[in-house]
Length: 87
Image (tube, rainbow, N blue to C red; front, side):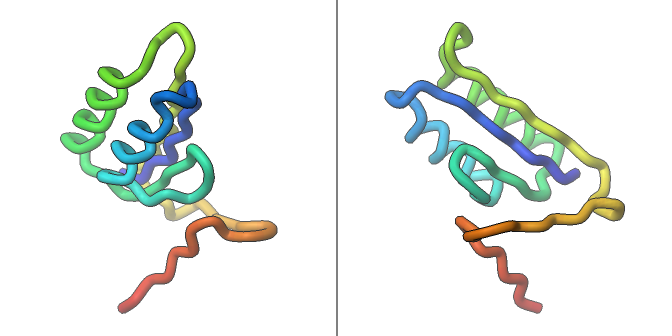
């Protein structure tokens, strides 16, 4: 499945959240990740972020899609992490 993950963590935990998300997804922009991920890895990612976060101040939003067939990605301005596909 394809997911877009957005998080908002307090400054003292944001670095660990970044490192955790980078293990599973592609960094797109500050606190935004996207990519293909399997069910098992998505579950692991959620568990790791759940342990890391303070539920009274931090948040994570995950949008999941079964297919990117009907989606379009458009970047206006500077691309923070250019994604080049090599075949």
